Amino acid sequence: MSDSSNLFPRALADELRHTLIETDYTVSGVRDRLGGTAARALAREQLVPALRATGGEEHLGVLLRLWWLQEPVAERTARAILPVTELAEAGLLTLAEGQVRARVHLVPWELDDGRPGYVVSDPTVRPGHGQPNPDHVVGPGGASSTLAQLIVDGPMERALDMGAGCGVQTLHLAARASQVCATDVNPRALWFTEISAALSGIDNVEVRQGSLYEPVEDQRFDLIVSNPPFVITPEPARYSYRESDMAGDEVCAEIVKRAPGYLTDGGWCQLLANWLHVGGEDWRDRVGAWVTGTGCAGWVVQRDVQDPAEYVELWLRDSCEQGTPEYTRRYDAWLDYFEREGIKGIGFGWICLRNDVAQDAAVRVEDLRHEIEQPAGAYLPDVVNGAMTAHRLTNAALLSAHVAPAPGVVEERVSIPGAPDPEQILLRQRNGLRRLAQVGTVEAALAGVCDGTMPVGPLLDAIAELTSQDPAVLRERTPEILRGLIADGFFRVAR
Image 1 (cartoon, rainbow, N blue to C red):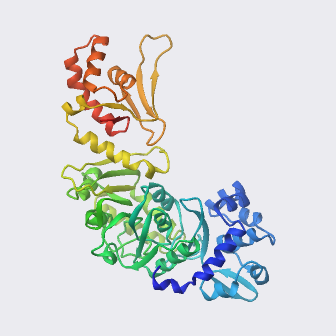
Image 2: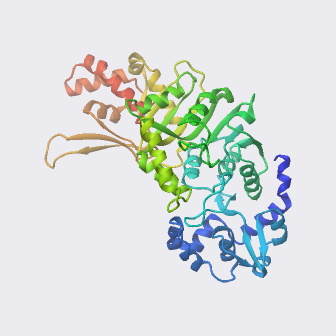
Image 3: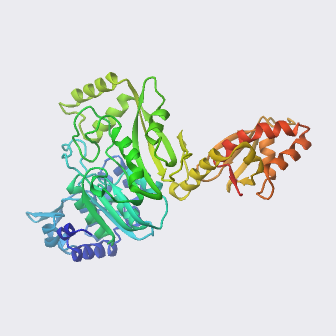
């Protein structure tokens, strides 16, 4: 940890961590204590069911009211559980008129090895209770979980959490890397990151203040992750956690373009991103241009697209501006900006790059909306490897290759009852990306007989003989289809 960790004494962190674990203030403990109704209500920003579920003097309920629900707790009740004076001096609590209030939002978080962890941030600003401060540090949310499940597995030597915020990704990186560097432009964010790490029993983290790669010039990492301030707005940045001073989607483009200079050979850069859909331009070309020339292989996925009005409403809700005098003015100015720039929509998704330093490195760019198996990071390298393999294999090489169906691939046939032949033959992935592909009888037959022991060419010859087709035609036609099925993960090249 850096010297600034002295702002929150390690001994106090250890004492608070022990108390939180002893009272079962953990992910499973809180889930069981609240129950489904209260938990779902909290997701809708409704506190009443949770307050009803946590009443009384029982210690877990008291901690939930204090740290999570931001309710005052009687001083005598709090002192029976917590070192109130020391926590107040450290900036986590306030004490006044016989009541204790939390100055931070402290929630349990499950670490990758199953141990209990904790994330500390600013209290949630709820609608009707003002707006966030410019240096507000948000707690973990859906984006945090998405990125955490996307991170590739370790072990590795060094990792970077760029734009660490409250430190969620730092906690996950600490289990994968020997050393973790967490950076942010906001010093409050780094303070929270250090507290989150200390309360989670993690001591392999250092923090550095600065924008993007500025704090780590001349350094290289095996893994860079970022949930950057990607919100696209016409105004100067108002909230450091979500906006930068770069125009449009340039902040995401900058992270991608500069990533190879900070990655080790084979190192990964993974980030969440927004990108613009501009009239007359394919978004794939836009994002693909960020990657061109980096020498990286990878995977770009669009998970959602919002029209300009939906996008503006989302972020005005995020800053609790509905019902304020500024709401209509900001909404109108935002739409003016999108219209002026020819912006028809905004894409949400992720970008994962591997520094292969290869002239023929391929990056798959696709729209993928359906549910996939999580955590995706466990099989993400296989996705990139499959795309690279398909990209590199010539038709002749494919015919000489030994292939086999990927684990979890099953065949489905759709037919009218009594019909001699199926209307459709489908290959389905039961795990991983859970893709579905319609194939012909030749590809289905190949999937049924290939097991990695024989080359594709002789197998196609045998299929041609059984189906009374010209083997030369199958050898000419099938490689291109097979290449797509390898890229999509239905087949793997054994050798």
